[in-house]
Length: 473
Image (tube, rainbow, N blue to C red; front, side, top):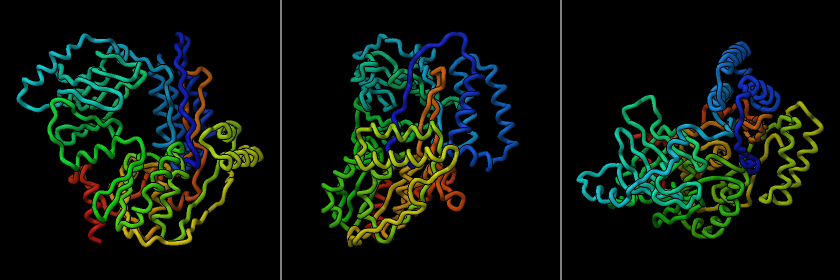
């Protein structure tokens, strides 16, 4: 959960000589994390000091044989997995790998010949022309893999003929399903690929949504709607029936607060005249609590209680508050909160301090008669502020959750980052610990839906399923 916006990730792209020592990078990582991460001690207490010491010894031994930045990155990431699965990470700032360099070459790809080949095929396969984000690619089978050659790109870092991603051999269980090359040409491994009918493919958990351009067949309305909801980068409103409207919120980032508020304000009259509301937050990984404020009066039925959190006060951690003072997305009130918080934290270096209330209780002047029933679509990507929103929403008598268990990354939160002295790595760690611990821990558990939607129900039918349930209430 982020009280305010996450500061942007910083990456410096440099090259380093043969003096690189992974052992030294581990010493920096271990010291920085132990002294500054708000969840460090909590994790060690849960798992035991003996297990932590054994983990340290095993990782230290591995660092001595890690001869490159990439090998060291893998080892140090394994060290971080001891603590938790979310709100922690290590970025390698030297992103060029042999694999990326090899596939970033501009290949002599004959698009005209490929289109003729597609016309001659009798069966529909993954081969074809696909579009996503800033790219148009030709997906061509070569041996046991499919390679996506750039056809068009609005990203100046990518040229026609370069390979944007590879669908790996499906028979190879030891390899990720997809090797995807990011904007900077670094390789990212993706373990899931979902086909939606004949014309849409989802890589990862909503990471990439691709639509087939050639040869294209007619898609069902449900798939078309799901792709539209999944691929939008901005909040979206739709009337899906006479009795049900839908609000899609892909993220709660602080920068999106104005867009979310504007969307709700624009359609509020319609929402408050409609029996049912579906709020789709699938894939929403969090952001800022203030971003969902305009939703609360709509779902409100009784006082909403929110348990607070403690900040671990250190010189490094407290510097985040000073950064907020320069953030253009922060209001003057929010900047004053950051300044006051910094002053309090600086007086308690080395301690856990709550700069707000232990428990806040939110009330509104009225309960809206409509909508009577509200369904929230959730999935395993929902974490952080998205989970905090769900804890608030579940206190309403109107609200039911539809989908699957959330990510369970909320208790240790409010991320910050710092670079290693060498500049090779950037550590992302957390500044706060929830006062819900240990009585209502979310980390590693998640929030369960009221209506579990199992794998037999395609993801593109979740909206229709929730609609039928709500309209039948």
